[in-house]
Image (cartoon, rainbow, N blue to C red):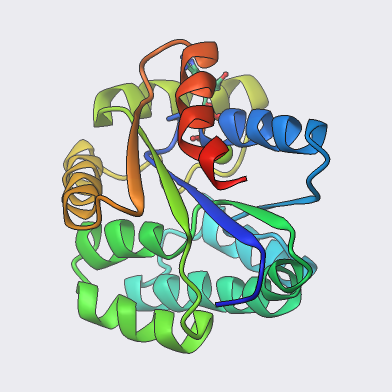
Length: 212
Ligand SMILES: Nc1ncnc2c1ncn2[C@@H]1O[C@H](COP(=O)(O)OP(=O)(O)O)[C@@H](O)[C@H]1O
Ligand SMILES: [Mg+2]
């Protein structure tokens, strides 16, 4: 594990408030004088941004599940190598909007590709790097779909491929996230995503502040 940095990941269903809360946490940490790297998946690095366009394009309905999984890990490997490990080595705080846990729940469980396969790829792409803390912003599948649709309509986004999955798929993802939180309670902390934004920000700060 790199020397003095702190690696925090945000997880949760689409529309749970990860991006909103990550921005707020970054602002708080910067106000304390910490250097913060914010990164989002898929994407982050310039190469990752190109991979992101393939993954989220609603026109790519024929993308097969294995190719999808490998593209996520390709983006992640680039991010770990180019940005995350160097920043942690400099003692910075790295905030990641999704990481390997997303592959585990969406591809490993949601698509049924198997947790073992996902973790085998994690060992190659992330080389032992694990988040110190994972904030699981928790909302149910129905709320997730409603918020994501509202947001995509407001932005006239073409990044709709994941929201077009069935409610059943999103329910499986929800179940898998809860199983993960139960299995790794020291690392994965549940935060109620249906609370108000300020309340969630305060709950997250209570979890993060002892570490900074
Ligand atoms: N606590 C909250 N209560 C109600 N709406 C929220 C809350 N947090 C975020 N939102 C809204 O839900 C949508 C998705 O939030 P976002 O932060 O983009 O989620 P994510 O990054 O997890 O997909 C946005 O329109 C955002 O303004
Ligand atoms: Mg987001």
